[in-house]
View 1 (cartoon, rainbow, N blue to C red):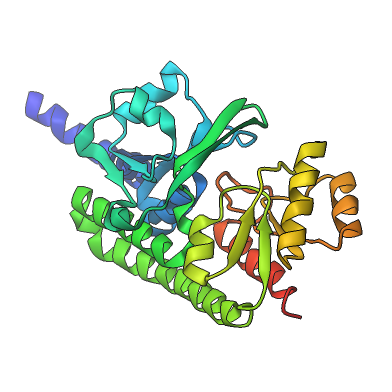
View 2 (cartoon, rainbow, N blue to C red):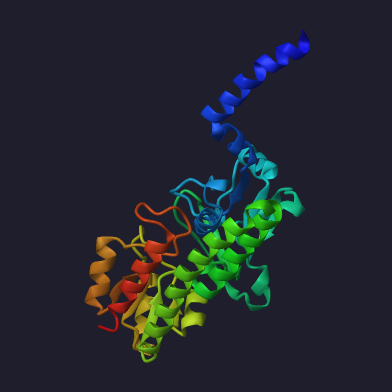
Length: 300
């Protein structure tokens, strides 16, 4: 009688699997947590529908200086993979206990080429409050050749965790790699036309961009949503007297008042968004493509 009961239940169970195939597939997907949007984008492009990617930082917060709550830290601790940027990015990571065997440091492949900043500048902006720019420069992905290495680190981690999907991940990575190589080639070609141009950076986030594409930068510490104080304008005036820089890189469009005063000084605004958090429109690739287009206006 028991065997007969099992035989009767088996067809019904198979029907459920046919009707709800996502139930069994969902259980097999890796749970992956990242610490910034570029890594989320790379992981989504590579993992596709076979990986669940999570990036819990609120959209209006700088992920580099965000501190997650206890519940969110617990979610990271339970993840199958924790994708880190490295270069001392997301400093909260050093303050909590995370499972080492599930951590992927995506910049470890070029750790000997990380840029160190000696000067410390502390300031406030956004909900993240006061923070300092010092130590290791962390916007590594703005060198698109390094972005490829970071994406490859994610590929290898996914393949180790889910070897049955290795070919699928490789195929997706190859497409992402082609996109990033195209960006890198376009930036290198553009940089050759800008060798005689000097730039001002509104924020210390363009170190790897400047090194890879040989851009000469003078760095300020200004915020798009804050009108600079008198001391900051005086410092800019000194820079303009010493150099012929007439273009200023910004993470986002500055206040109208700031833009107008810069225009009066003969300084044009170029938005080159690092895209650390989820953009309001588009994705990582489209934002970077627009960045390149914005930079092209200098040469036109």
